Image (cartoon, rainbow, N blue to C red):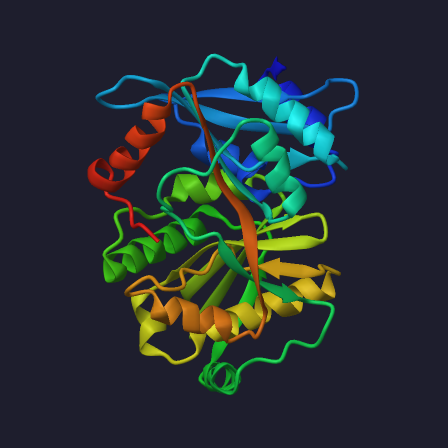
Length: 322
């Protein structure tokens, strides 16, 4: 059933699992006036499955497209997920796409398939991630550990910033600009994005500084006793020093372990993507476990829409195909 924004976040606030992309902070960051939102929940009295999504009109073909990032579960069983997805399929959208960032299970796959969802043609995002067990002693790769020591010896300090002011957020947004420029990225997190995310207390900001200058930053998201990587920015200065990124993540792990967080999800690892070898080497350096998300699912009212989405992603939007 469709509910309003306030009721949705009120009802899901006590869910056993609230993924990053269904959180209040992420919603506030993505709450743009030119994009309609829809809030869906299976039952108001005893909610078990819920999600919010963005409604778009696709270019050229003009079909209605509902894009959902993950599902929220509240001790949901397979039958609850099937019923929710079946109700979702009845809504008046030509295409429904769900990128489910819950960890993969055969039960979830069966639920999606029983409800009529299929995998899309082509894979335009990786479903792999690295999970770190924070209950155990973290054993870094030798080079990773050495880089941490070099950074700390060189005066790099890592801090958790509980309530960042405008000056700090402005400096960090500038780091994101520098980061995007150095990597030729088409986007960066703005000061507004950071403010929106951090207005949700489950988002945490960490910085690395050298000689009292902020040179790198990382934002993570807490989901009960689980943590997930959100975004990171390495400024020009941080690239001139060795081990800043390693020291920053080590400081974050120390904070998480002190606060009884059990796992850290690196939020995807682009294995096999040309140019991303450094990212993979860094994330593999923590010696975590490779895991897989439930991934992307699609339901279309006409089969040609499924084929059309591949053409749109591949040749119009020009997404990278894994």
